[in-house]
Image (cartoon, rainbow, N blue to C red):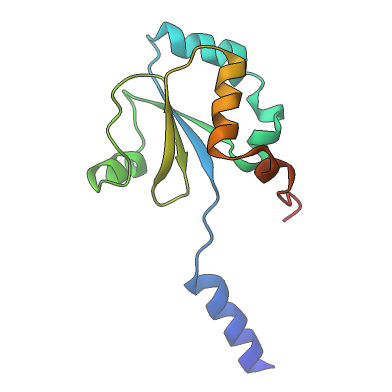
Amino acid sequence: MRKLLLTLFFILFAFPVYALELLMAHNPNCGTCQRFMNEVGAYYHNSEQAKTLPLIVINVYKQPEWFKQAYNEGRIKPIRGTPTFIIWNGRKELARIVGYSTKDKFYSRLIELFPRDYFENTNYEN
């Protein structure tokens, strides 16, 4: 029994699990960012995508230390304009969407990066 517990402990802590997040590089002076927040941001948490990719808004002028460190280490590419949406796995950038035009195009682009069945077949109970 002791060996089993030690094995489980090792597995849980030796192989960290990283959740996906949708980081938004946001400029508070950006009209397009404000439009996104009004059209999508206020409701995103109710979407299917939010279950897999919760939205984390990052103010480009007040970046958290972990974000700065990831950028300095090359795990996040430079932000060239806002809004920029980064699919983040807790360690590095996996993909990005630069800009925002409409709610429908935003969700279509997310589904291009992560096909609809990825969101529909994800087990959210765990």
